[in-house]
Image (cartoon, rainbow, N blue to C red):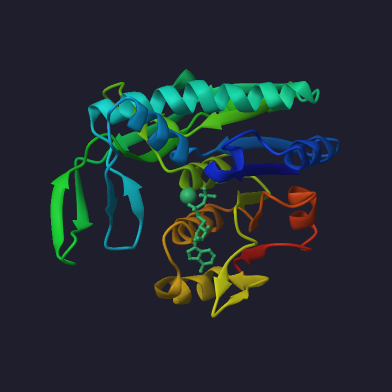
Length: 269
Ligand SMILES: Nc1ncnc2c1ncn2[C@@H]1O[C@H](COP(=O)(O)OP(=O)(O)O)[C@@H](O)[C@H]1O
Ligand SMILES: [Mg+2]
């Protein structure tokens, strides 16, 4: 099987947990893995040290995102493709996993269209249109490059930075990057590792639901998780068979989700 695994920022914050690394190694004995990472918390921390306080905006759909002006785009690229990406590939290689760190800029791996304008909900709950800054929507993935790496036995580790039509770096959401990559490479599964056990509804963990059921529950889901549910629906629409949202802080987070022992499984039916 071909599996895309995305790890959220809180999991990779200090160091990718050994349980994640060991499980990647185990899973690789009979599968291929493409790893995508987030890292928003670290970007905010470093930006603040550089004297650039970060602003966050909320869209009418309930997405919370970083407002990425030109200076923030530079810091975002530096932290994601430099600090975090290299930290992860070193940790993987220390366990004998042949990891290649790569961003969406390299070989135009992730092509995106810059959002010229954004609709946001301001503090008073009113809709406003603002300049889009440097965020983008992915419209192409260089699957040839990814297949080249996978076929040679490497684990590509992708930083969520895409290249614009004007050759600028764009901030792209990690969950949705993972969804697009999984869709384009026709992955069998997309696994989103986060800091909670899965989707919680009415105070309980949901072990399984369909994309249709997920859509009906969107209004009950908060920031962070709602992006994952959208990403899951997008991945399923692009032909990925199953998306699992699970904790990256447990033992065997990947194998236990493949066997449906942990997490929330989302599928078309
Ligand atoms: N219905 C929900 N079920 C589970 N988590 C939720 C829900 N609504 C909001 N969340 C929040 O989503 C967070 C996960 O998203 P996020 O913080 O962006 O993590 P990551 O870094 O993995 O992307 C959880 O820590 C939780 O606080
Ligand atoms: Mg997130």
